[in-house]
Image 1: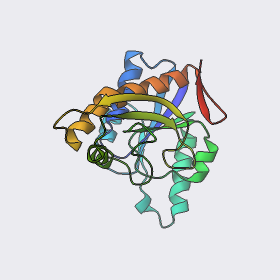
Image 2: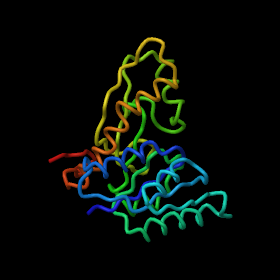
Image 3: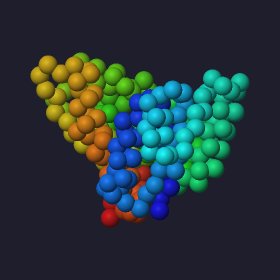
Length: 207
């Protein structure tokens, strides 16, 4: 059984997709053992509590030094014995030590078709604002492994979403979540839990 820790910062809709996936059996051979938030009072923590999943708040502002925050985050993950870390709307750059320790065992969901509209500063509504500003016809979401860069790790899954007339950043964000993010993130976790994903020469291979 794959032990999964989920890192969150906000509403936790992707966390809910994972909880629902485990509950329905669409995610096999996996359990969510810990939810960690860098913000208190967020909806994601309520979702974890309702599902009976242990949770913890680790806020950067509670520590005098960045390295103390990073150590607390790594220690929390280690104590959960998590084998896979899922970033489900976690709005902090991970400590390099954590990325190195869990190489090819951290995945992230990004609300665009990488390499479009990704990298530093591209999160939340800004991704969708830029897509609409550029006039693209198709956007979507990407699940990828996390490396030392920003949205630069090996791509696992992508799903396209058509942009329609009169879309706003808000309506597009909602549709990308519903039609892409909530589908491919659970699918990626399932594939990893079943041992069907491996990284070879910087690219994902599926069996």
